[in-house]
Length: 285
Image (tube, rainbow, N blue to C red; front, side):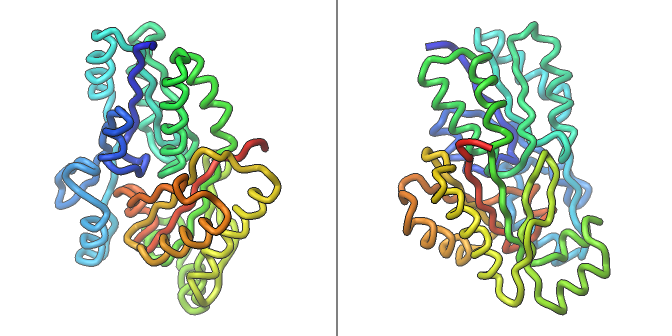
């Protein structure tokens, strides 16, 4: 088997335990609380972010991994004879990808950096595919080529229980925010070409936003356009919403292929508590 090391950043929204099981090492982004840089998933979790916002009424800042850290990490594995593949949060969401690419340029094609064009557990799905291809004996370059083909087929749909965090982060105008509060609107956002767009709106009940996600997935499933390996449901503290999606989806999709995770600090910072994401890969565009 080829000696390949798969790396990712902490925005993949998979548990530390699952990453260890897959033999994937992660590099944490930083969350700035009390002027202190804390490592995502190591020093700080999603609930710490929510508590901070409730206390200070401000959003914490997040920071990408610096070039020097990437250099040190890549050098460690290359010196041990590995080809390295690093999967990054989308370049439209963070400078992480560009920092990793700068570092990788020093290693003569021994390090491959992939722009996931996405965030959260969509990256987790790609990591699962990378491990599968690695176990099938593909070389690093071949894995990268296959993953790049899958990236535009990866679906991210997320229901937001509050628009407050989008508003605080400047991603939602005051007018839209207050209209959303008054009318009890729960937006479903979707990542398209590396950019977050409002997909549809659930009104009055959060369950209606979740039903939008279920119906979209069921439509693709009924048209034989869902990759059968895995789907992921991740959430910022919304166990009820996660359970609802799981139970409805498992009525027609194998339970053992549905993975459940908590979202990390980056999603928590920008989307807020109650956020519930659903992720799958299509077979074709």
